[in-house]
Amino acid sequence: GLQRRYSNLDQLEADAKHLLTPQAYGYYASGSDDQWTLRENKEALQRYRLLPRMLVDVSNVDTSTTLLGQHLASPILFAPMAQQRLCHPEGELAMARAAAASGLPYILSTMATSSIQEVSDAVAAPSAAGGAAEGLAWDPNLWFQIYVLKRRDVTEMMVNEVTRLGYKALVVTVDAPRLGNREADERNRYSLPPHLSLKNLELITKAAATTEGVATDGSKFGRHFSDLFDQQLTWDFIPWLKQASPLPVLLKGILSPDDARRAVELGVDGIILSNHGGRQLNFAPAAVDMLPSVVAAVGGRVPLLVDGAITRGTDVIKCLALGASAVLVGRPLLWALTLGGQRGVEEAVEMLRYELELSMALLGVQNVEQISSDFVIPPRGGHL
Ligand code: FNR
Image (cartoon, rainbow, N blue to C red):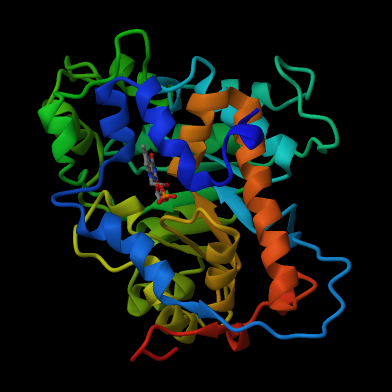
């Protein structure tokens, strides 16, 4: 298993790279332009320090938490990521099963290579191909990530479908009116391999007047996505979505405190601070660095989630200490899926959860609620 071969999540990428085509690896790993933001995500986390407290009874450390009324085994969610079948034949299905086995939410991407229905079926029972590892409870919790399309009717069909199938939350990604400039994809003339398709978009390719397929060749890929996305999308979408579905709505890709405040005033149920893994606007700040001012703007009215380069238990603790309720993990799960399929992802998640538990004990907290700003020291010269 993964746990015998690797000591931590940072070690997975190098080996996964060897198993992937240069095209697939480039698509997964890349940031935009010269990748300053991609590097900054990692470096920003490392600038915070943790201040432990001693002589606390830590014989029982509990990593579980509650988010939007849902029970999570730890404050970790599976970040929405497109095209998970690029690295494993079962792609999203294996990933979603690993999340269910781990008691964590799985956020399905609009740009998935499996359909909303297929993923729902895949987690319906643990007996589906490759059940959970022993000792893990089966707790399916599917969320759906929305890229709002020009074809608003298709977006509405997706929303109706996920609501009907019992998905538990909607995540609207707002930082991608167009796709960022990923130079590796241009160089590799990246396109989706012909045996795969973006299942949730088949509705459009079937129905729309466009003759162009979704998986266009090489460098046109990003531009084609941009053709599908509604670049005229503005804040008035939020009230529309709130009335279109009873599910909680979270916005993903917010970085500014003013945007966060505006989102809350429009009734969103949660905010995911994110720069999209450094794949959209280069020189956007690390989400973690924006947490303190967004916390001040939002004032506890809705939960804040954060992502970007989270690979360590101490990374999770830093985000929580800075005011996040939970974190999203992205690429490390793709590397784990590449290396070990569903079970590999379960093991990777357990490595992270165990690190979190151990670090909480060493920090001197018994549960997630006790992690506060008292435990974090800001970057030198900075303040919270
Ligand atoms: C993403 N991300 C993303 N986000 C989203 O809202 N919808 C999507 O379809 C995708 N697709 C996607 C594909 C790939 C290959 C990557 C690496 C990322 C962004 C993702 O949800 C998350 O914000 C980042 O990946 C940050 O986390 P990591 O990768 O730094 O842990």
